Length: 431
Image (cartoon, rainbow, N blue to C red; front, side):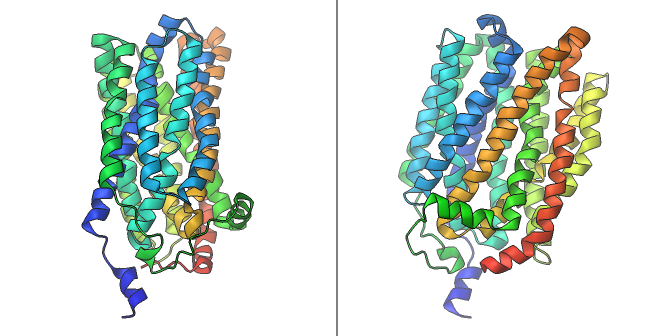
């Protein structure tokens, strides 16, 4: 076996798995701080006297648009500089700002701090995906990304479970302070214990050490058909997760009259466990199927999104809250299958010094479509439908997730058709 082939089939080192565990925790903290407002919305709305449209702005564009815009320059920096340091500094910044949200006294100040959290969290994805790609070869990458992504599901679950419990005991302000500060400690661990890997070494590829100008990167990536379809498929799939995490608790409060502690416990556990299971299964199964046909990295997510639709409808329409929550589990499980395989496909088709930027461009779409537009649209539809449907308006506004699932599945199937050829042209080994 040649030296290059030996590198391709070399197993990831123990430190690679340590780095993966650190990235898992970073993403968990990120998703706690990102989703904690979901369980606190009703308290914030009452305390600050704001409308659903303002809440939609706070949870949607205020975070998502700034997060997306900051993601591009931070990704460009990650393609040039230490990804470990970018992660550590970003984590420390957004954690402090999350805690500061708890001491704000006006909607305007809360909005500004939320914008700051969005900018800080933009450091996570580009650096993390690029690091994973340099610690794990393609044949193991979707599984590694799925383990990393499970940190996000843990974070969502803890945001609701701890958020509901702490806010009932101490109020929404103390909750934000208590959940924001632990990220500073983790930032120190990342900075001083994670090693920066050599780019491309795990694949036996040579890193020329130069990052191309942004215009050239954009032209190169959008010339790849698979990349164009992933740019639409992933944001549309993530619409379901974002819309449910932000408006799901309000839906259960308004339509089914459940309390915050009940919602925090059951909604949080169902979303966290089902999402983590679907993510892990999606990564592992797609890695196995892709050994026969790399198109499965996109085909499996598309199939999962279509299969999730009837369960989404059941969750929204079933009159009994406990049966509705039963439907929620399979809906989240099937939707979560999409994440790791499509991210792995994206990293497989991107050049070494374009991987962080390739992530950031897709994340820009996720932030605008899923993180920005979707929660804002649900909030606007709630206010428009409220005169006719009252508290049940949110039930019908959330049907947005059915449309985005089916639309995203179309692009997933198109990406599956193109992906094998695009990977072959890139020359990345599948293992």
